[in-house]
Image (cartoon, rainbow, N blue to C red; front, side, top):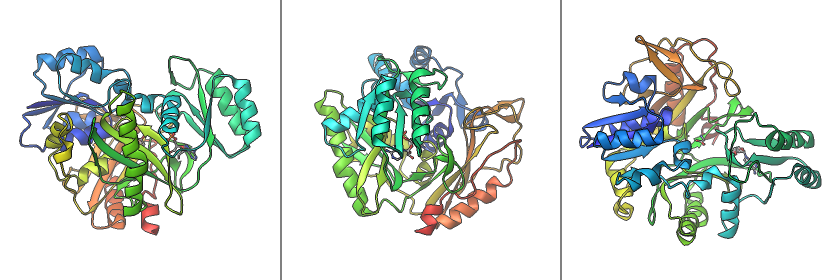
Length: 426
Ligand code: AMP
Ligand code: GLY
């Protein structure tokens, strides 16, 4: 079988790398891919980003299965379109992807189905939003309604910050949010305290299988300080997700979500990612849903997956997840993101990357914002690489990842030095 991975980030490099290990696969294509997938002899990049062109290409090339990495094509309806043309594809439909693409949709959905989440209100009118924030006080959280690549959320510690965020999201159009049909909207919600975890599952519309647990670091700087990013590193498993928290997440969040979507007439197929806030008593609230796997969480998770990913996806696209059990490496995997100068606000492109080590079963350098030009690898986006290592403990995986990362260089590189610290402290 020939398979296609849609996307060009670190998550998609990891997906393609993992699929290429399946003996049942003849060829893995990645559209558009990146410098890492380009230099991997087992993968072929396809320079197409338009959904309709890609569907035609998939038909012409006899693609047997398509896996979609990022949220944007899902929110644009790539799954609906491929299916309408008889192609097998794994991901949520456009309607189901609203769990991520609209904060207002997902908050209303959670409220309707009694799924624990922070108290909130939705606003289109800036004056009403300002008055609401004045009434509730800080800290408070302001979220743009629409896809914003991880930059549409402001956790305001002061009222001034909250007011500024409202004006920025409702009145200024420079944030780069893809507004939903109703125009600019914000969700304002209660500030939650605790520890976050990324809880991901596979759904076939009816059945659910949980993936290994993971945790990422969203802030740019050590000690979880600085601006929010798409994620500066991640590891799996996440000790904060104890057996009890796991059972609770399935019972209180995941199963009601899958049943709720079915009941609402929008059955959910694809990966589902619940961002959870876990308080010291082990109670959980849902911070957000993503309609895809996390990036960079995917990189450590897939390094630990021993099952054949093709078998998993074939089961997931034929309502066969009730018969599937996933096999995981017992070791820990930890990935450190190396980001470009200027990330997250205005990443610089075109810096030459040197010192890339040879990939191995224990240390993989997954590429994201890279491109290959005349045999040289250059930076081409915000998050550039994710150096991911497998080892017997978090500490050892951390040492191994940083050892490998320390050989890699490019001008202006930004990297946290403390990925995994929460799991080491525990
Ligand atoms: P979201 O995209 O909704 O997950 O928000 C991005 C990040 O903002 C989350 O990973 C949290 O770190 C933080 N965040 C979001 N909502 C809240 C909240 N209600 N309380 C505290 N932190 C939050
Ligand atoms: N790492 C967080 C995300 O993928 O949304």
